[in-house]
Length: 490
Ligand SMILES: [Zn+2]
Image 1 (cartoon, rainbow, N blue to C red):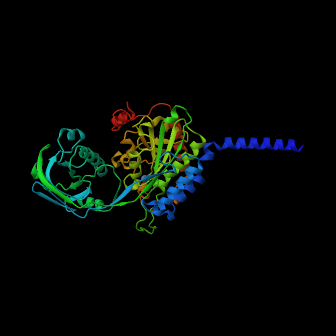
Image 2: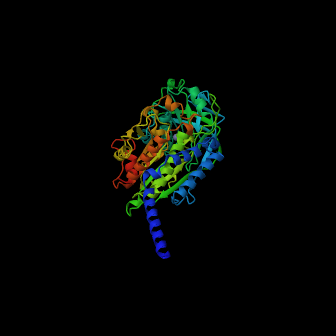
Image 3: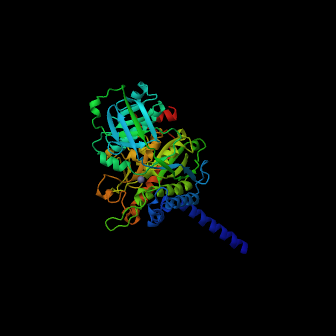
């Protein structure tokens, strides 16, 4: 009798357990508003003091994400055996001296010259003028031993961040061609010189670079026009400057993985990223505290990683998925630059990367894909959104350069098919500006019902994209199409 009762008890409890287990795999049970609120409230608490790079609090955030990766059952990735990938970061204090002459024209630090990068230097010799110095132009000229003089950025770079991106690519080509350095003439009406001086005379950050650092300087056009420079001609001159003082501030990317369930596809990887740093503490303003909590930017994204970890562990997709909480996005995309320079999984096996980074939301009927219309991943993103009654909006204002301003660009510029998903951003308006990089970006102002829908959409999109056996690609004609084909060997 006792045995029979025991057997019955075991049978009943097994059934209950089996039912529970089955129930636990439903997305409504996995993605819950209470848990979302708990993660966001931890990461964006006042006590976290804005998760600034180099602060004790960003270490706490990294530990918290790591703990949750472990709880949700992610495996460590070789090269980050304790879930941390060390990121070698440098904090650079501005140059204190800089002087140049080009022909008979003189330039002085701050007044008409800005040191963007470089060590101490005292140089004189030939400047070679290259116009904008596109890659094709640079190949035509003999730059060896010369100082390259160029117009800043590229022909179509009409915004400062685009100028920066074009300039740093140019700097690399110039260095590879054996030139001494790069002096660029900056004439951008949207960026008045005093604003630039202000912006570029503070502390800056970079990752430790394996290559030689050559001087990179911007000068004001001033009366250079009177030299009537011709492409591929030289002019005598000099450049002296003090180097930037470097302080090492190591950071951490938090990395975990879910192994794919398909014998063939598990050797292909989808990389999901979101930065977990923010901008720290500033001045108190309008009766608010001084802490930039960074709830939307980007505790929301870090929480997307944790929700994805939890959901996919219970519903393993065919491809393997790597989840990376990136450090120091706010200091110049440092975590993603470091990862893509030092990938833990070869980039040519990374078939797709998905970044989640939000400036806030003002349309709860959609999710936003900043890369909408540019890759073959769109239909599955639409399918995921539809399942939760949402539409998909594209980049609301390409002039803002949203794609270039967050971590996905580090992957895209290496050729990886890279998309960016975030809560619904219909336009840049006061509803967004009220919170974006403001002290007011607090958890108490978030809508958890909408965010729950967003996270369900996000994890479903990841699941669909990780299960779909076809190849992902940049659409024909996209600026990343060529480098991507090279990466994947097509
Ligand atoms: Zn962000």
